[in-house]
Amino acid sequence: MTARIIDDAAQVLAKPQAYTDEKRLHEALAHLRAHAPVSWVDVEGYKPFWAVTKHADVMDIERQNDLFTNDPRPLLMVSDGEDVLRAQMEAGIGLRTLIHMDDPHHRDMRKVGADWFRPKAMRDLKIRVDELARIYVDKMVEKGPECDFVQEVAVNYPLYVILSLLGLPESDFPRMLKLTQEMFGGDDTEFQRGGDVEDMLAVLLDFFNYFAALTASRREHPTEDLASAIANAKIDGEPLSDMDTASYYVIVASAGHDTTSAGIAGGMLALVENPGELARLQKDLGLMGTAVEEMIRCVVPVKEFMRTAQADTEVRGVPIAKGESVLLSYVSANRDEEVFSDPLRFDVGRDPNKHLSFGYGVHFCLGAALARMEMNSFFSELVPRIKSIELAGEPELMATTFVGGLKHLPIRYSLK
View 1 (cartoon, rainbow, N blue to C red):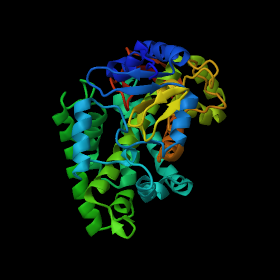
View 2: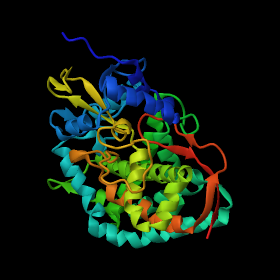
View 3: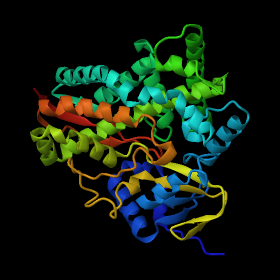
View 4: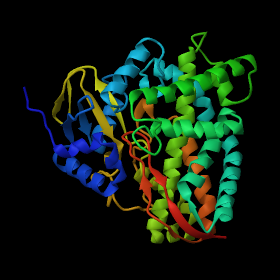
């Protein structure tokens, strides 16, 4: 049997705290791309996996969605949590979102919400998104000359967008914000409800109970919103199970919010840290489309997904046995020197920009068009109004191995 390729640098991918120090993280990932692009990782607290760090390999694995499946291990979790959630799903009582599914069930479930994210729906929603962008830039003026951009702007603007799309009452927005932060902040001491598996399960139960009540309401009194479309959806003539319905709400409400807020916050920091690029964008707002793509490439709100081999295979010549899992590092793929020139540079005009922040293949992010539109609307409103902007303190990143970004960004600014 061929000896496994093991590079200690790959252990960084199983350390939530590593994502709070981007310089060291990118140094480790650059080393892996050059010396061990497919490396075996076996660290305490996690089940072993192969770390895949090259852009081409990530794309190749995503293409082969029959060979490399989401089930049974779609993302990196501590072993105990993984075992409990797996047991719950097998018992029919665990949340099972689109990221947990494979075709054909994934394809059928994806169709439930697909129309709400198509170009026509996005055009119809743009008026509201532009309005919210103006509201939140005006709020920055009111709060100025300093604010914590993450907590006062970046988490709230996309929350209003996605929960408006679902049709949830504004009075419930604070509750949804807290739950999404607890779910994705399970590895961060500031946001976690607690440090053990039971606390994580309690967050999921709170989500389920909230959305179970919402489902009952929308089935009894249908409305013209995405929540009603989910509650009343049918597959092969049968309504969705309570668990599938709740799971759909969870992925829309949480992933549709936290990823975009991370993109907006990280994009803001990139402009502050690169005043030349900010000036370039202010001079030519026609670059806004490429600027948003570059923000998304650099921030990488979703750090990784995992896939499990359904047959013996290999990646870049490295044997992968049936049943072994691979971690797709989007953070690393988006800095691959073979794909991006000067990959650590923030370039508002970067084109082409083949980043993988939204994934690739059949699991490409359902809400990608909405996230792009929200970011474009916000920065199109903000950038022309910036007279001056700088850091007013030290930015802080969230500890995570899955979804996250900045949790605090103190800035000092003057807006028109």
